[in-house]
Length: 141
Image (cartoon, rainbow, N blue to C red; front, side, top):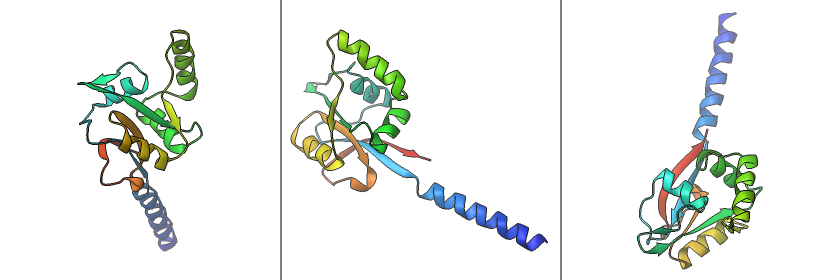
């Protein structure tokens, strides 16, 4: 009776540890013209409350609305759910502010970041290129 119980516990522990080890890892990236930014600064950039760092104009880039990386970014970095974020941008619209630019893929985000100084975006860490600078990293656990 003890042996099957121990085996079940062991299997559960192994499954949970496997899930933890395979948590998705994401990064906010820029080209080499932007150095490190704090989490508060990244949030302010994506809410269009911060437009410059030193003398560089910032260009935040989102992935498409249904992208799982965007959902993770909004939850873990912006710390806002979709309803709250939509309410924020509705209010900002009436003040003349537009939300960040949206791109369809991680590849498109990376291409734009490499071409435009001040552009920042978020991607899966597995998509990271050597010529991108990691500004912030988080994971879904």
